[in-house]
Every structure is written in C-alpha cells, then in structure tokens.
Image 1 (cartoon, rainbow, N blue to C red):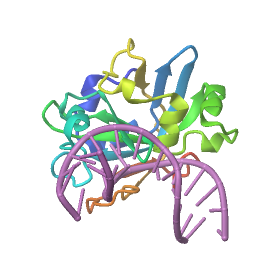
Image 2: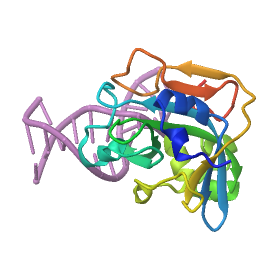
Image 3: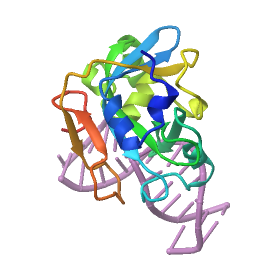
Length: 187
DNA sequence: CGCCAGATTGACT
DNA sequence: GTCAATCTGGCGG
C-alpha cells in the first residue's frame, strides 16, 4: 500500500516511527528499493536544530505534508519528508535503509562492494539512490512520483535515542531505529 | 566578498 | 580514537 498524504500529516515523531519497516522506492531505468531502518524527527521553530527558518531551502518545511525536503550538509544530500499540515514546519529525516532492489546500481554509485556500506547513513543513502536537490519539493504520495513509499512488515522492536550529530539537540529522543538491524548507522 | 557552521563521511594514528 | 574534505547559504561571530 502506498503511503498517503494523510499518513504524513501527523506529528513528525509519530511519522518517523511508523516509517520504520516501510519500503522506499525510486523509479529509474531499474527500480531502486530500500527498507527504512532508521529515521529522525525535526520540528519547526521550537527545535534549535531545525532548518525551518534558514532562508530559502527551509521554506519547504512550511509546505504541506508528503514533500521531499532535501538539504545539503558537509557535502552530503540529506533526504527528508515534510510532515504536518501546511504552516507547521516539521519533517522526518531518512537516515538509513536496507537495500532490497537495484544493489548493483548502488554499488556503482557508492564505489564500494560491501553491502553494509551502501546505505547505512543519511549521506550514503542519498548517494546510493541518486537523490539530489533536483528532487526538492516534489510530492511523494502518488505512484506517478519518481519517489514514493509503501507499507512494509512491522515485526520488530523500535529503539529510541537522541539524534545523531545534532549540536543543539532537544532533551527528548527523536531518533528511531529497528533493533538489531545491521544497516542502522550506529548501534 | 570572505568566513564559518552544519542533521557527514572516510581515511588515518 | 582523531581529523580533514566536502557544498551551500547566511551573516559580518
């Protein structure tokens, strides 16, 4: 089942948890698929780590739910999905996936053979899937989109932790990952 | 216009 | 464990 716009119109922490186990799909010559194993939630003005008021690129966070919000940091593209109805800046960062389809393409793009190194981090994931700024702002809740997400199996435990690499973090756990999954960026 | 931060990665001691 | 390279946007740190 395709995840609808309504799915994303909720609190980013809820969406982040529900996205675990779902399947990220990108349509190219070959279909790329990855099971989402690690996410992080970001809020708007109340979140010191948020990009919501960082000028032009942050404007996407103020849009309606279910849009790609792509931001570069340290030379890496990071892929987010906007959450909450329009006017409530927030989003979910995809930090890691487990490769399911198109592994040979991912290996070529990442220039590594080790499958564990393919998508086990937010910058690695976007590189393997060929995601960059050109996808910023697109709606990902229709099958006609080059990127969309479908439901997956939910048989696993969820671990919560503080966000990774965030200098000014909130005092609550906003990172979620599948317990024991080897594609999570850090245990 | 130059400097610097930042939700990272990979190479190296 | 440490550290430098990487890109973009914001600000005058």
